[in-house]
Image 1 (cartoon, rainbow, N blue to C red):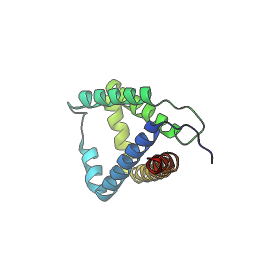
Image 2: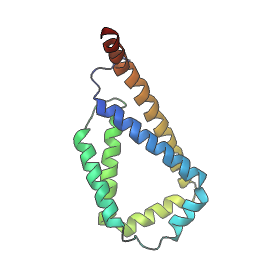
Image 3: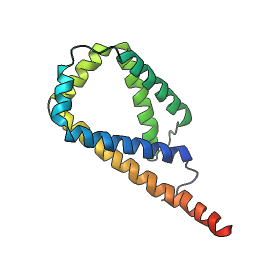
Image 4: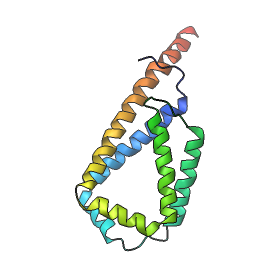
Length: 149
């Protein structure tokens, strides 16, 4: 596989998103009963919905600005995640009650464990590609610079 000019922020975002998804998947799996019960007990979206969704929207827009890679390559996953974050936050701001009902429906049955499995699979893919490709592309340059000096 020949890779040319992959932006450094692609590696950083892949590593951050990958580690975040892996940690969240492990926590959600380890405490499945607690988090499923917590979500099912929620009656209405809380007061923190607006500031948290607004902050998520701001972060999503920032990530879209710094990383828009629409190429047929694994790094497009970062762009898709950035757009999904932004769309999700807009949906929470527009229809908080409907989004809460959607989350409750997902967390009732097997959907909860399917969500965790997808998070885990995606995180491992992102971490593996980010660390491997970074050391392959940038690690050799760093080693060459260190030897030359």
